[in-house]
Amino acid sequence: MSNYLILVAGGQGLRMGGDVPKQFMLLGGRPIVMRTIDCFVEALPDVHIVIVLHPDYVEMWKRLCKEHDFRVDCQIALGGTERYHSVKNGLAAISSESADDVVAVHDAVRPLVSVEVIRHAFAEARQSGAVVPALPSVESVRLVDGSGRSVAVNRNNVMLVQTPQVFSLSLLRQAYAQLYRESFTDDASVVEALGHAIQIIPGNRENIKITTPSDLRMAELLTSDN
Image 1 (cartoon, rainbow, N blue to C red):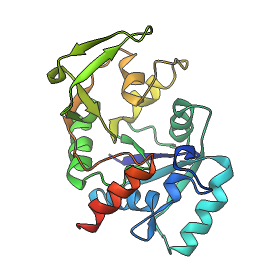
Image 2 (image 1 turned 180 degrees about the horizontal axis):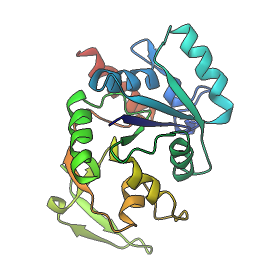
Image 3 (image 1 turned 45 degrees about the horizontal axis):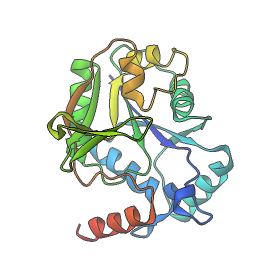
Image 4 (image 1 turned 45 degrees about the vertical axis):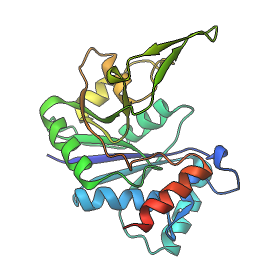
């Protein structure tokens, strides 16, 4: 029963500005992606890691590993056109055929995921086959149609989905054998297209996705409290 992590780090980080992709920006003196990996290694020391990188940034990753003396063993896969293709490439890099193996897919720019959420997600995935962490919305929610018209939605029926999304390895392989659709916005939507139910577990509020400068400032505040 092996544990795998596909770390999606193939983005170019254009919304952050500058020349350094957001996953390689420093948070507390270390690249964000390395902090993210640390969370999984702490939670599951035996986890096998596949990091999915944009082809242009493979050498940058190798250089940063030397500069920061980063010794965690990570297999490299190349990113694709869409997130779907990047995850599919990450899956192809896993050679195991064991029916008991579990794999997580996680955003490289979520370095504040808790150890408890990771362990809980992996444990539950071994039972149900498909798990996502999520939080209830604390904001009012409106649904907007193509014309711009909106309608209020009961926020008690809305959950804000995070990663890691964790699955039976064999199930995720079956899901990614499907042809790409625009409706595949995350891994759970790909699995759900097979007709498999998704179990929701509580996420942690600090597990923000760093995509803008203000997100990075918030992460700096959160890490300075530790």
